[in-house]
Length: 183
Length: 212
Picture (cartoon, each protein chain N blue to C red):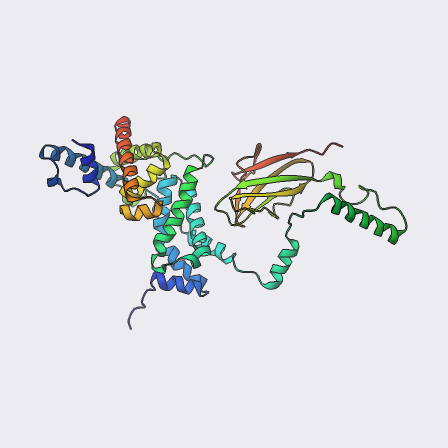
């Protein structure tokens, strides 16, 4: 017997809109980790990241009918999360968690020889990222940590590619100076 | 080394052999440093997996969004507090009508204020405001409504500022805003705060009795 064919994103979206709410679980499983990783890198707090992702997914469900291209539900959910995260990071009254105060690295990723050096590098970059403006941090993280294309980031941040590149360049220049300062 | 060349190389717009020969070694070294730094950062950064309870919580919240039936909506409409706008003349006419009706029915003077129930003067209308452009609904709740969040605020002009007036007795009252029916938010503009015992802060409003 042939294995069951996995539903595409567009099929899942159509099923949810037709009343099969449970199908939304598939989208949570497909995109939850990616969304959480971004929220974590931007907020520096696991609690805040989980809260932001929960809000984004619920908001996505509520607005699902307004999604024009169901095949693009992943980037669409990411854009909702990015907006919420940006608002959260800009908020002057948010809980102020330094980015370098992070949970322990999972055990299986540890290499005893490189552990200290890697922790030092991560700490330096985290501290430096925290000194960027929220807009520069978001642009840098999306480009260099998450490896997204300029076109994709420009759509998420609602910027022209040229303006975005300028922002990333400024972020890199500032980071270079900060990394030397923290060395 | 030109900074612009470095950025263009890091952006993938230039190949190494398109760079001035004298700058190639320095730019390649700088790019390799970035790669090492970012690779270490990416591979050691924790928290990339969403927590296992996320799916359950999202689905529970979605389940709570189910459209209520006709009777539930009608009941909700009846119970939902909403501001009533009356001109002083209309209010006076209404009060006079009620007073006349009581006189007719009972054949004696109306019960003096304060004799039964809550004296009208003991309630003060307090204005609550919250700026929440992303919110779909905002209500306020506190110790004055047993934290039910039953007083809906409104954003009539759609500018993201939700506002409403709530009847509260004089005294100190803890309160929070309930955004989108599920998220409790502390008032960022409150004059005072108090710990709620669960690690969050409640806003506190001091309500004084009106002087006569």
